[in-house]
Image 1 (cartoon, rainbow, N blue to C red):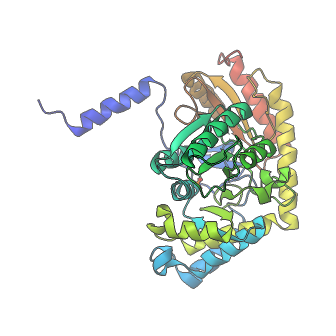
Image 2 (cartoon, protein in one colour; image 1 turned 60 degrees about the vertical axis):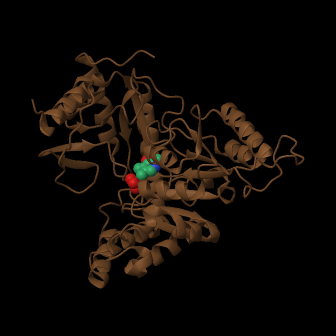
Image 3 (cartoon, rainbow, N blue to C red; image 1 turned 60 degrees about the horizontal axis):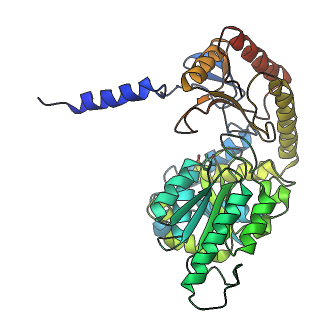
Length: 421
Ligand SMILES: *Cc1c(COP(=O)(O)O)cnc(C)c1O
């Protein structure tokens, strides 16, 4: 009997469904905003990473249109062939200046950034140390790099230090016979190289890494730090550079990563750092080298987004976003959901439900009431740690945030109870 490919794939899909993990696309027929039209229905939107409402901002649109008029739509080739257009260079200069680093390089997405960067910096003989909750792009990069992988429990500094001590011993034995007294005196040029990667604000938990302590540890043990600021860029720190700025450690983080697709309202990913780092990535990062350069319109929009967040208007949006976060924290923290310890210290406010099916049911009840909050499930988060991931943006009004909290209370009334914590 011949089984068709379709039958096999249908069976695979049935298995996904049986676990409550089936996903499908929802068509959006409007621009990003506090309200969106989703599957033909107008909904209040608490799901977007467009934290400052720049994805549909007139200045970004105008910049993109100007770039299209001048440079066309396609970049035509990869950056190292003939696709390195003026808007890419202008964006990279603006990013380096924004982050106050020597240089910057952009990729077509944050995902491609993580993939290209990590694989350029560590290989088979090296050691890569990750927080348990880092983003899939970092995990995929780690696998691809072939480096020896060690994972520490989320934000667990003790476990991180234990791993760093172990890594230091590997290095000491690699430099056989020299005077290695525990803490390494050797430059990281010596193998194995040791790279720690963490997010500054975690994408699904919304909590912050203990950055100052991580920086101190990596310096004590001669490791490097790559910091993914995807959910902090634009509105953390005095100039919106990210959590590293807020913690006062920007110039001690070797590899500063971000995305242009979230608060910056465009698309693409970036690394800021030393000229040497950036030149190395341009020479080695395969997701940069073997990919057509991003559309010039995307680069121009990203640069316009950067300009806005550094303007008075941008600062007002940031202030409004933080007021909204405060409002939501107050209203939602008193709900009966399990609240993580740092609830409401970023724009991501997860309501932990636990069971996958239950989270999906709750999201459905909210949609019936005109509110969109995504149910986040495995494999995005651990099994049994499903959650409603509420994200705030600067365009939300007080009333809209109140509607969310009321709708949640009603959804609970009709029998979708959260997991007791
Ligand atoms: C979204 C995200 C990325 C990927 O960025 P894209 O530009 O969307 O590809 C990387 N890291 C984290 C933590 C993210 O949340």
